[in-house]
Length: 331
Image (cartoon, one colour):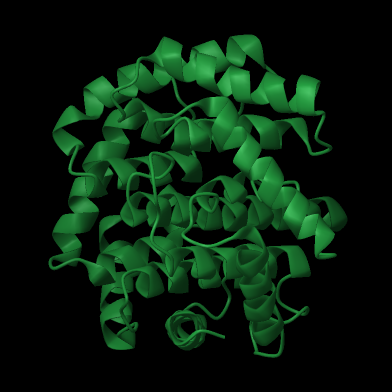
């Protein structure tokens, strides 16, 4: 394993262990995603600061607030990285409250959107972003009412912060979806195709060429005998890797190497997460260690942001599923 990659992996492992101690009753996936917040910033979690931020969050939000729901560990981790945690929370809440007055769903995904707007330095543009996001969401829902749901909100909000019009964004997403479903006939869930279109539409470049790169990477993964997930944006996540400064064979080998390494570590083994989720987090770490070329990903910072959102989104969706399953079993 390359030194740069191993450093990122070991930092994630150390951060997960610290987060797990403070959020003992949290979900394993969410704690890993929270640890990734620190690791993506190249920081080691300061557990005392995390505890202090947890108290600030408790003091400033209600017990049933979305800020203290499944995303609590992530929110606290982001607060801990801020120079002024209390101000960070206050300003993110202000953005979230403005978003929540619109037509988008009240959910953990909207909270992610609020965080993205704030961290992009676009808090003052919240009303404009919200209006464009609502327009885009309606257009997507009109084309695919079953596929479009609250899970799309975070990327809809991120897309609304680009210079592209809602119409052009929707056209790119639809072209990616139709091209892969009807012409390439790739065998993945339909919602994955829409999710991939959202990720690829975040950047410039020909949507078909970008889609073809995803297909080539996916085929390389299968050729290596790796069972990659095709739900919860796991397939769509490949859109963050296709412009890495590496050939596909080497990239896949490194992802598998990281996954195998993590499998033996507490918190990353099969008792905590499944192999497909572990591969996804491994891909995030490997991708973050590469520089990105060309128009596909305009900067490694954008790639890291998209990767983080996907990791958090997978964790949230899995946590929601666990809650629903537990509730059904108890009844």
